[in-house]
Image (cartoon, rainbow, N blue to C red; front, side, top):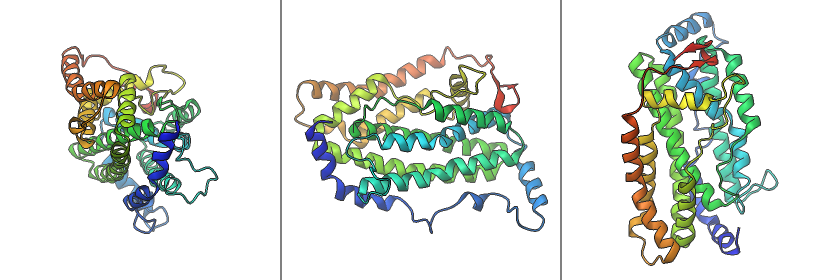
Length: 329
């Protein structure tokens, strides 16, 4: 990272400290156990039986989308490691008192509950092959992922702004589908997680907005660079050891269900362009001015591509998933 970027990041310490209010205190936070049967209570067997009866309403395609989302959340160690690769914002000792380090740890603590809750929910339903799921989590954390942020906090926070919105959309849509299938409890769970993602999205979007205020040229070039290579999904290297194209198959199911689609990808680009007010930035020159023009046109261009691709999708293709005992979806 060049010295100017480092100065920008260092100058944001007070601003980041103010954004810590977007994290909830431990006392005010929900925990996974709040939304699961109490296994220590009298009559726990009846509670579990009722829990499983509700979950029996979920069709296989929703289960696949839910498992894929859960596995993505369970790879949290990889994401915390990623935050600590961004120069100037890392938690160098593990207990740093800087605002950046406190944000990183607080964000990780909140995110950790997501995988915990979804994992335990799926375990208690009895609907999925938990060993196959656990193997997939194991593989994904071992494989890691590279968002191609190149240790640059500018690119890193553009990426997290995009990705937090994407996960919020995905969890919100699974909540909607769960409600439609008659599983209102899962709707509540996914809604809680989507709410966390919305707060985290706001913080990361604010970080980038501040960078735009201080260094618009650097910010817009970082945004352009990530969009040129396209956003790499966190679970891109997902595998269960059997299906080498597991992520693509999961993504296809999610696209068909409307959980996360190419239209959503295009809409997120347009949303970020609006949030960071790219069209109103004045005084950019040369490469930065070209980047501004490129980004302002990019969302509508992707939306047209998504619409065109919809015409060539086929509902006939099915895939087997080890997560649901090799049933086809």
